[in-house]
Amino acid sequence: MNDDINIIGLIEKDIFSFSEVSRFPGVGFTGNIQNMLGAHQNPGVKVTEEDEGLIVNCEIIVYFGVNIPQLCYDIQTRIKNDIEKTAGMPVKAVNIRVEGIDKAKDPS
Image (cartoon, rainbow, N blue to C red; front, side):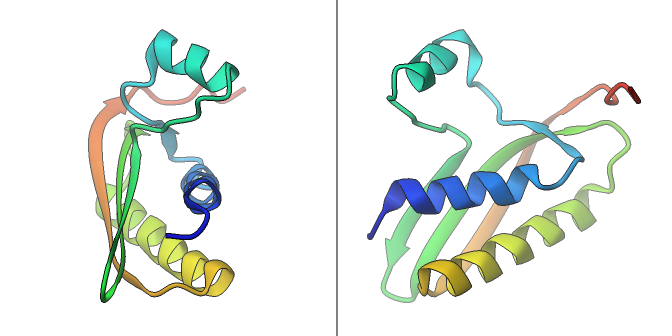
């Protein structure tokens, strides 16, 4: 697959363009240190390539009170459209798994 990091970066940007998404699960302290040292690996995004196209699997944590089915549909649509438009690669599936819920974001 061409430019895995750029595709993952595009997916991360798409996911966090939704204010209802809090974070990826399981990054924690060790993951933050690895990211600072340039060993960027996101456990919340996995992209695999098949003959029919890319399969994108994302795990996210959302804020309390979110319409989860609608949010997942919107994220799936944005990721699929952006990858196909920007990278010119067909997307077979975008799977979004909500791993947890954080308390509501402070209104400030």
